[in-house]
Length: 266
Length: 261
Image 1 (cartoon, rainbow over the protein chains, first blue to last red):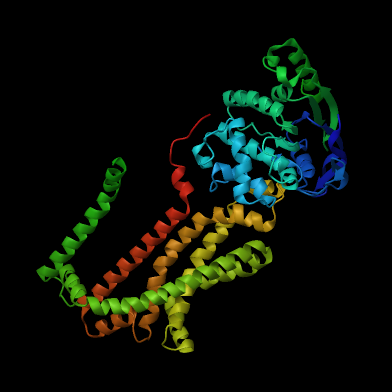
Image 2 (image 1 turned 60 degrees about the vertical axis):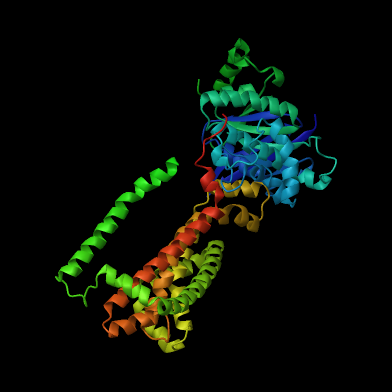
C-alpha cells in the first residue's frame, strides 16, 4: 500500500512548552487508523499540525509526496462539535467545501445531492441543521468532511462525468462521535464503517475511548508522556467489514489489555 | 389557530393596563382635578390629531426624511466601522473606548452645537440621528462577530477558506441577530433624535411644530404630536422586526419538530 499522509519528526510547542515531540506516523491508502491517548497527550495539537492550521517547530507533513506543512485546505478535518452553520440549509452546509474551492453554489449542490441517499440523509437537503437530531447532524458533518477531503480533486477534475466515481481523500477525525449518547454512538459506528467501505476515504481518528478505536481502526497508535510521543503501535488483525460483535470476543479483550498496559493505566 | 389565541392571552394584560390608564386619565381630566390646559383629556388629544392631520403629516414627512437619512447613514457607517474594527485588533483597541465615551454625551447638549456649525437645514438633524443610531448597531455587530465559535473558524480555515470567505459564510450571518437587536433600538432613536434636533431650530418637522404649539399653550396639539411620534416609532420597530424575520428564515425553522436519529 502506498503512503498517503506522512508526518515526519513533528515537534510542536506552545508558549515555550513542548506539547508533542518527534512524532512520526504514516497513513496508507484506504486505512483507518486511530490515535489513542489520555487527555493532554497532544492529540489535538498533532491534528492542528497535520491539518495545516499551525506550523510545527520542527518536522514535515507530506501528502501524496507533496509537502503541505502549515498549509490548510488539503486535508479534511472533522471536530467533536458538528459545527454546521445554523443559517445554511443542510445541502449548503455539506457542499460548502466545494464552494470555498471556487465552485458555483449550484454546481456544488449538484455534486452533493446524490450523496445524501448514500449517506442515509435523504430528505434532509432542504432543512436547517436545527431541525435535525444530534446523530443526523454528525452524519451531515461527516458528509461535509468527505466532500472537503475530495473537494480539491473535484475542482481539478471538473464536475462533468465524475458523478458516481468516488475520489479518494484524507480526513482527520477529532473525536467526532464523543458528544453522542451511547446508543446513537453504537448505531453511528456501524453506519460509519459501512460508509468507509463504500467511499474512498483514508482517515486518522482521535479517540480516548479504547473500545471505539478497536471497533473502527486497522491500526492504533498510542500517544503518551509529556511531551507526547508515539510509544506503541497495534495492528488490529480483523477485517474492518467483520467488526460486528468484535467487542464481545476474547481477541478484543486481549487487544484491550495490551492497550491499557501501553497507556500505563492498568 | 392555537398560536393566535396564545398571542391574545399573552398580550391581554398589557392591553387592559393601557385601556385602564386611558380611562383613568380621561376621568381625571373631566373631573376638573387637573386643568385642561395642563393635561388635556385623551379625547381632546384625538380630536386635535384629527383636525390637525394634514399639518401633522406635512411635518412628519420632513422628520421621517431626516430620520431615514440619518438611520441609513448610521447603519452603513456602523457596518463599516464594526467590520474594520473586528478585522484589525489595533483599531478595536483604539476606537472602542471612544465609542463608549461618545455615548455618554447627552444628545441635547450636542444638538445646539450642530445647529451652530451646520445651520438650520436638514444636515444638523441628520448628523444627530447618525450619532445616536450608529452606536447600538456598531456594538451589536461587534458582539455578533465575536460570538462566533473559534472552532468554527478553525474548521473553515482547515477547509481552505480565505478571511473574506470566513467573514461571508460564518461571521456576518452569526452577527445578524445582534445587528437586528441594535437596529431595533436605533430605529426608535432615529425619530426621537430627529425631533430633538428640530426643537433647537429649523423650519419644519414635528419638533419645530411641537415647540410652536407649546408656545401657544395648545397642549392638546402637543400631545397629538407626541402620540404621532410614538406611533411612528412603533411602526418603524415593527418594520425592522418584519425584515428580521424575513432575512433569517432559519430561526423560525428551528422551532419545528426534529427528525430522525
